[in-house]
Image (tube, rainbow, N blue to C red):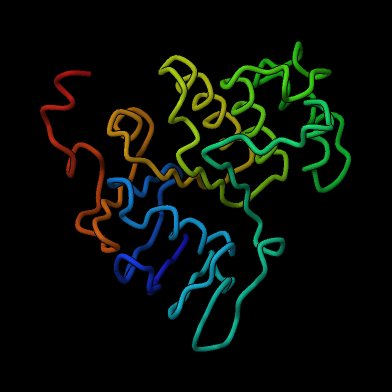
Length: 224
């Protein structure tokens, strides 16, 4: 279980959220500028809340009361940004292996096989399409064997077929490695198709939470 109870003042408003994650595929959903990415970055340790606590299972990652703030490298997370952040001077193979905590040939080959990127291994990022770059970014994040995979709107510029393909790979690997996935999104179609539990965010506050069918407009489903 992941527990997030934090407050953070940003220029537009005060983020004040209190939620628990007990599903494997979760979305923090809302319009652009609602505070989604800031919450994700706080979970990752890339930003520091003003107050509160972040806890993964029995490990406290952040506590203002106990003066605990684990650095990002000590939180076992994988983070995928909206824009691919591959090392330009490394091939796809080198990018993925760089993220691995220890050399594991069998695990590397499994990742490559599931993602179907055998033909990309010796290419450099500048020779990849946008979809290929994001696929490699996701696989590199999972190569760390994270407890939590954090996705900051990484599929925004991709067509639905590519989104679906990458998400199917995430599902297979999540079952294999037993990690949670938190997707920040303002795309209702992504959430409907891929997510089990939604936290609907507005101006830094969670207005609704539940399964997509319970909290999102039903007419959207009729068009899918």
